[in-house]
Length: 306
Length: 306
Image (tube, rainbow over all chains, first blue to last red; front, top):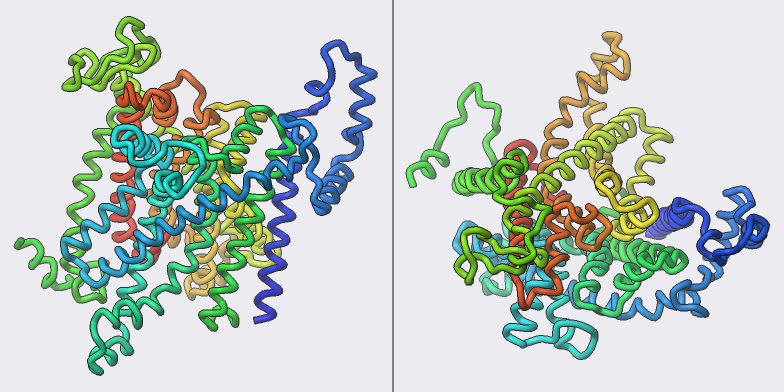
């Protein structure tokens, strides 16, 4: 287990390092920031001086290591759109809202997907099976941003059941969490279903039936406990989809999270903030996957010794 | 349902390539699966392929030129006329004509993006799996990194630094897709290269390049086709999301995601502007996913989740 953990942690760090290279490189893609930072009437000497001050005249790898050093000490520069605030600080202020909404979305998709997955496996090839599939496939086909707009229109404005934008109490979470979570349902349900089918076919379930264990207990306790391992690994993937999706959903619902911040920062060409968001999202995603893998290895010993 | 019964008892003919499937009820299920593609192929042709090819001839109005007096005209049956069956947008452009032209964008982006992503990923996967060693290590780490990056954010950054355009969207799509092919193809090549026919081909004096192209590639072709089919839907959603955020297809090109964004603020007063393009995406992706599932069940049933 320790060896497995060491390898996984080393891989995660390597991935983080590579992402820092990309985050560093992308700011250079758009050219030198000097021109936009100087006043209109500045001459070439002033431009050269600012370039020197920012260290932009140094070799690119020297610049990268300086950048990396700053990032490791938690300094990603200052935000351009909100002067005086550090880029990382601005992002961290917004992260709780994003993670909270993401968490809600994951709960929504789990609540819908796991029971449907289990029941479609138990009642396979019936009308229920078909209905479950249709619900899941519809969610996978509807683009989340459009689903969000339609939910706002129907449940927010026409029926006036839920608030349409911003952050507040529980009711504010309902629409964005559904718009975000429904997309994941299909995949999660499918994995649960096939995993359940396999488990329900196994010897120990037959034994439990012979022993006279009530059917509901067999399904929801004996079988689901083992079948749940497969969907568990999928939560790492979901974490990525949710983070990426937050950019779009937060824009639609005017949710004050890091995804919306990213869109604002990119429009304002606030690259320190963009870098901070990319690095933070990547870190959360990599951490989530490390966690899922560790949990998986803990639950299923075969993984550790592969 | 005589076809059902025939399906379940049909003997495997000597020349038949398909082995019998292990599950006892698979006959019934397969019979139902076989009915799906008829509907989805019909939707795909009617909604995506046919309009994309014949857009200039099929569309009743100019997709770019609006008529201001006719702006925000509701769809027929909702107070509108047959002149604009799905209504008009805020500058009087015909929604139907724009959806028809939008099919061209969705189809070409997904085909071109999947082609280049597939070729790149397959090539790297073949080389990594066949030659192993450092090349394999490098490619697999790149795959990990690519899958860990927050896609939409990178797309946003790229779009802002080099400007949103058709090519930018293609680059983003290729960037997102290649890793899936590389990972899957490499995994399969690892086992194929150990098979006898590869060793014999080598003994017979074939070059590595010839073995890869003539002996290994045909054996992973099914996987590549299945992956490509299953991905068309997600590429359409990705393109729509990018266009929705204003970093995909630039205005005023009729792209479905852009049209949804256009009507977002008017969803209460002129719901048809956003609703219909979103429905077009949903129906198309739904049909694509069902079609992809069917292709997978036929060609490569062991690919359970991609």
